[in-house]
Amino acid sequence: MTIAKTRGALAALLLAAALVGGTHYSAPAAAQQKTLKFVPEADLRILDPIATTAYITRNYSYMVYDTLFSVNEKFEVQPQMVEKWTLSDDKLTYTFTLREGLKFHDGQPVRSADCIASIERWSKRDALGQRLAEMTEKWTVVDDRTFTLKLKRPFALTLDALGKPSSNVPFIMPERVAKTDAFENIKETIGSGPFKFVKDEWVPGNKVVFVKNTDYVPRKEPPSWASGGKVVKVDRVEWIYIPDSATAAAALNAGEVDWWQMVPPDLVPLLTKNKDIKVENTDPMGSMGMIRFNQLHPPFNNPKMRQAVLYLVNQQDYALAIAGDAKNGRSCPSFFSCGSPSESKVGSEILTGKRDLEKAKQLIKEAGYKGEKIVVLSATDQPIVHSQGLITVELLKSVGLNAELAANDWGTLISRRAVKEPIDKGGWNIFHTWLVGPDMANPAINYPLRGIGEKSWFGWPVDPKMEELRTAWFDAADPGSQRKLIDDMQRHSWESVPFIPTAQFVIPTAYRSNISGLLISPIAFLWNVEKK
Picture 1: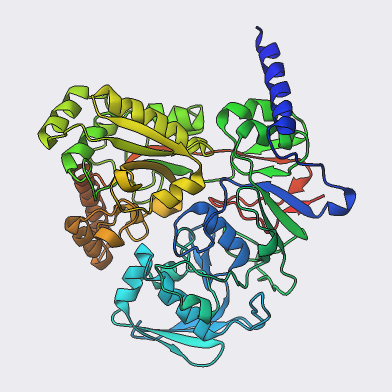
Picture 2 (picture 1 turned 120 degrees about the horizontal axis):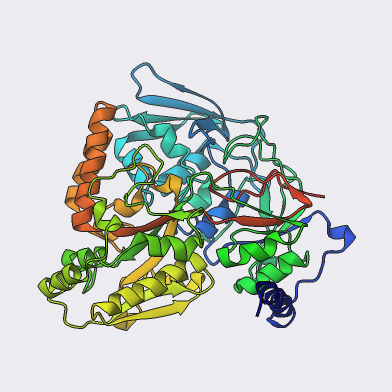
């Protein structure tokens, strides 16, 4: 069959899948032209952005909530809900004043007490927030719009913490909601952001609905990443969850949805043939894929087993599987984002050289592996995750490990990865994911590196040495000392193996030509987006 005929057959198959593969997405009527239909990266299952680092929850929360500060495209921290702030001469006391007119979606004003309670809850779960909490002497309400933070000693990353752009983000909630235990999910979803969540229309596994918050007053500055004016230019946004990529492509081709957030590389050629569709890369840094181990249970509670997997990984295989070509995916043998100031090449040859199966087998033998089953979680509705999982399972089997792929959807994966029990009680051994570049840009925010046991990110490593190095990095007197400590963290990570970087990549987004205003950002923000 010729290439042209093959592509034609694929296009026909995609259109058929949209009609018979489940839900049919009818074309919007003229009266609905201000409804933006968006296909998100995953199904929304968890509504608490502090309880999970899942990006789908973070993205939902940016619709609903707002932040005190935010970061622009130059990584500069900018006021967002804050109108003005001052720092005392001794650099110990910050005074914050909120913008006038900030209101929650239930009509209640945003108060200082709401902000303090929200930050305190966030700081119990977030890596940088935990450090800020350690440095905090007290928060104090001055009046409804003014509050202070007094530190025990100067902390240069205070505003960076309050403006942290990605998981976990210090979103502001009503005080009564923020008083919820940080390790329990919130029961209410009341924010003050540019959109309101329509909970009555939420259908998990199908649709999430938002409407414009007409009471929201945007900042005057132009939008840049999560900072500036969040101007909503549509009346309603519908997230349409379409787990099958062929169906999503057909829906976009037919104009039944407006924007598909993450396009698998094999479908890019098909979509670019449609003159009414634009396919672009809107993420300036790209993302990092990873293999994450459960260190609570055998066999990966033994560092030699984690080291063995290192000798199986060839990043080029993962980059090609995730991104489809060298233009969108590449090796990045660093535990910090490549292209960031913290990128380290110390010891990188372990992931850039040839696989060493004999070394892997030797380490497995030394670890005393007894044939325990290894459960690798995967998500068939997440090509980034599933492609990595398929490669890893085959690599594990190639050296005699008893590995099996537990494939489901992303919502199920993010629920199961929180299970700390052994695999016979619903636990797991490995899962794959990815983090946007800013989430791994330095030791302050790179939460997969943390080694604080059950307070660590999923996988729960105990690593006093890493914590010692991280603390020293915070306390370092100059950039040169920090640089040395970053390389020390990288060197130590090859021994402790908190995770294995698989590749750095960008995944394109696709949208109809009547859509404009997409922001160049690591996160898909839906303000400033216009539908004509």
